[in-house]
Image (cartoon, rainbow, N blue to C red):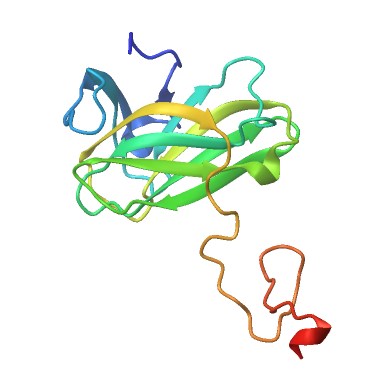
Length: 178
């Protein structure tokens, strides 16, 4: 509330990367009750989106999850959130959008990057496979503790017992269980 605190702008030329429409009236106050929200219209590029500088001192150390509320147009299936570091490059996470035409909460777990201390910019890439120029709305960019399983959606690889990441495909047994 009280207006945008971050200076949102297109990732590039508006005809190609899309346009930040500024703050508009919230299209649906049933879930998100903010009076105004950010608005974006996609351009011709698959990688169209917005960017903004992060607040000075932004860190993921204690709060590694970034959350965003999104009101996506019909046909939208995903959204990518990127954090840009001067020393470590771009770190990105893509999340599916399970409903359109209403507010959904998207959660991006950046726990694997919580030791990066120089993130300067956030970028939002709106569904690269959607060609629609319909309007997207977004609001409430927040940080929280991690609630998303880092291994969510990982498919077990037959024969892989343990790769010390997400492939932990064994059942622990003790001598008495054999």
